[in-house]
Image 1 (cartoon, one colour):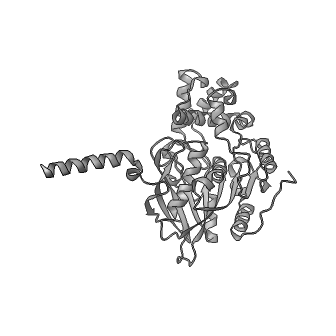
Image 2: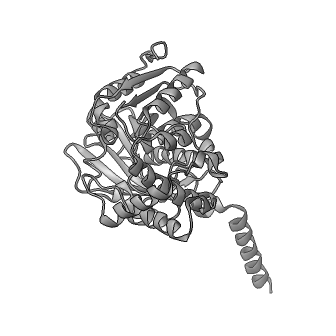
Image 3: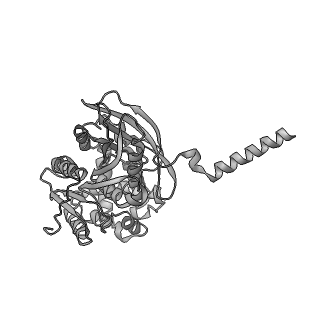
Length: 379
């Protein structure tokens, strides 16, 4: 009887611990789950495919994936500085993860920093390469996944990643970079953020949807927002039309990863054309809960105490240059130190590449502790 009672007591305690402490079973945010060495990498570089725990804005722990790259050389006496690279849009379903693509090495401008001795942490964001919903342009979810990737990288001995880091992102990743900076002090106070660089970042999301010049691409990205925010927030798809329009929206999101130098499929072209004609008067910034969600997920215009760099091409037909400039001016009015780069290049798709030299030099200066320049008076 005593043995039976002991076993019963043990089972009850185990169940109570499991129910009261899900973190015990699911892992603390920033905990590295696995780091698989990648065999084929560019010269002078070593890399790992990583899986780690992160915490969504609603408190749910989820697994996320990414790639960590570091110089292929002896571990230095001092920990290496870290650059978190936040990627632009590759898609909104798991198969579209950058870490799963053979184009990752060619399509990731941030990897250039490895040649300067940095560890580059390139998170996929939740729902890309992992189960669950991808929080497309959802600020807190994405920012936390970036910070937790930096935390996780520090558990890879061969990377020798330190606690000092900068973040640089492009397009969707520019939005992610700004959000990472915005929440870093309270979410990951043990890390030291030296600067945030954002190329062509979506800022005021409702205004960007209104002012984006390329109507076809705007329609495609509206489908991405509708699909993911419906899943993430359970927002009704009724504003997007009836069952047929909603079906097209879902198929565009589920079946289309954005691939380097690829042409859209005929079905995609027809689907976008159909929705474009049906969504001529659709303005999510005037429809609830979509308007409130867009406002909630737009980066702050208040100074969050970190040097900023924003780069924008005036010929960008996806992220409206006027919206980016207005956001930059608002940051300046709040007291931010902001460097503003006007990009010369073909357009949106190469924003980070076209501003890489100046951005990486600015990042190097932030790690060196040099005074941060400001273009606010000029703006």
